[in-house]
Image (cartoon, rainbow, N blue to C red; front, side):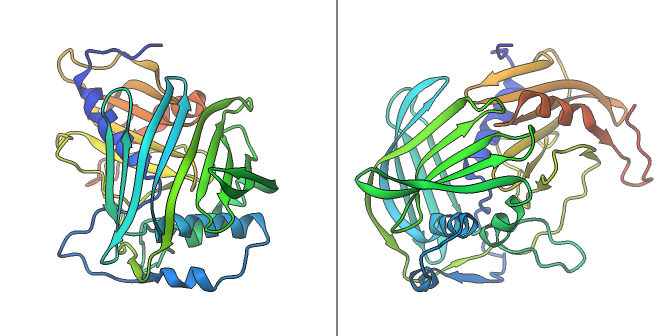
Amino acid sequence: MRLGLTARGFGKCLAIGLLVLSTGTAAQSPSADEAKDERFDCMALAELETPETPRAWLERSLWANHCYTFQARAVRIGSDGVRSLALSHDVVEGVEREVARFLDGPPVVFERRGRIGRLSWSEDDSTPPASPAGVAEHLEGLYRLQLSGEERLANRNALRLDIEPLDGLRYGHRFWLDTATGLPLKQILLDEQGRVVETFQITQLHQPRLYQGSIDLDRHRPPPDDPWHPTWLPEGFMPKPVKTRSPRQGDDIGHRVYSDGLATLSLFVEPVTGTDQLIPGLHRLGVSHAAVRHRELGGQLRQVVVMGELPPGVLIRVADSVEWQDVASGDDTSP
């Protein structure tokens, strides 16, 4: 189904959702009053031996994404055509800054400043690990990891890492990792039938350098006290400890992010008011989909939107599973 173009409410959701999805498991921009709990010394990567297992290569790549500064040119091939991009990543006083700028088509720029994210919320004095440390272990129970030989990309030697889902509830990935740094030079996203959904490839990688210092880890964040929650998520999906409030969103829009470490979905809940709403159903958004439902939740008709690069049936099932619980009484008020 084609997206309804008159839905301004979805425009707000889409803008925030794309920003969160583009940052994956990354952390939030730090504010001045947030204490810096821990740091990761990037120079530790220079002392590590060459990885020998798929899991070790994956973890090395995740840390490399944080610790190498570089500029690059890349192409993205999806259902909406071919787009070229300029990419940059640097670290200033322990805080990362990433910029992705599309060079053709509509002028779009994504920018992120932040710390290395945690794997989950902090509950009951727990200390969740930084994302790279926990993600590699977490993914082994959800995907099959396999090394599949070497190739040459962007004038650099690359090792191919295949990540195949163990169920039909998420997409597969193929990564080509730079053998010198661990940085991903190419990524292919495969749907549940094994068809290529999107290809992203760096064509020029300019002088990647290991940051000579430490990067801040995000502070411990307690889980939010939302009255609504999904009662079903694919195995391995966890709520991400990220701030989702933004000036682009109204106070009446609830937004949470869930991920298994690779796949990510955004869930929005807002009141249905007026006529400026999305048509319930499934909408295509480039390589992503959005499932839209109008549900009676908390004594009011609300719009539920679930979007992400996942099989459409998964997004629909998550949207249909959302329930509302009165925080004060603990009573479930969903039908």
